[in-house]
Amino acid sequence: MDIAQKLRSEGYKVTPQRIAIYQVLYGQNEHPTAEMIYQSLRRDHPTMSLATVYKTMEIFEKIGLVKVLDTGDDCSRYDWDTHNHPHMRCVVCKRVDDLDGMDMDDTLAQVAELSQYKVTGQQITFEGICPECQRKEAH
Amino acid sequence: MDIAQKLRSEGYKVTPQRIAIYQVLYGQNEHPTAEMIYQSLRRDHPTMSLATVYKTMEIFEKIGLVKVLDTGDDCSRYDWDTHNHPHMRCVVCKRVDDLDGMDMDDTLAQVAELSQYKVTGQQITFEGICPECQRKEAH
DNA sequence: GTTTCTGCAAATAATTTGCATCCCT
DNA sequence: AGGGATGCAAATTATTTGCAGAAAC
Image (spheres, chains in turn cyan, red, orange, brown):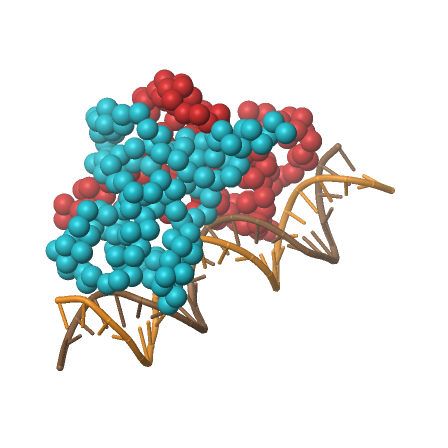
């Protein structure tokens, strides 16, 4: 969690932008898009650019500070929690939630056994309608 | 599997393009992209357009003739096999294979129980290095 | 005949890239 | 000082859309 140390040890420089981006992400459960991160930083960092967010996320992914979620929906979302876990995506409002309480390690082990691949990761997303959108749909 | 009947019963017209696109997809295990489908049709259907492939896939998805795979990698892939099953994606060559032998129905039931969502589907993709790319990487 | 479909070209939107300047180390 | 980082603008790429002509019903 000491991101400065982590960056330095991987040969990257520690910049205010990188710190700020990580702080926006860390511990929150919204799984924001690059745009969402950018918007929440504009206030305090007027010169922040979307390109920097993308470049930073690429580095963060490389050094294991974030997991990039392929949620369909034409834009990536980012998760500070890099341990294997599934997500739920609302097909109506597009929100993405963690799906807690499901152990994926058994599944991953099973995959490693069944598949001829050298397994390195997973993208597990269930689709559905979130409680809030269910309420709205019932008029 | 009678796609003509299916289209008609859902109020869509039966066109040679739609038949051809379905025939390219049906039964193959490559999980092609729109571009791949387009390319394999150009020979026999010189006027085929990429836009038609996209529009057709949208209809096919709506009436349950294909499953759209969110495999990351900035372009969608299409699967004629619409029953719930996981995929394996090679992070090197980007190929997508079916992962046979894993029952996902238990998992889906578990999700429906754990989650407050009304669950409607899933996107389960494991990432790794395919046998062929493993061989290449070993020089 | 009417309505839907096709296919071209133009529009859109997420992401990437080039490059001059800036700032960590 | 020096090399990587930032941030703007332009480029790229997948996908969508508008629309006129063509094809299904």
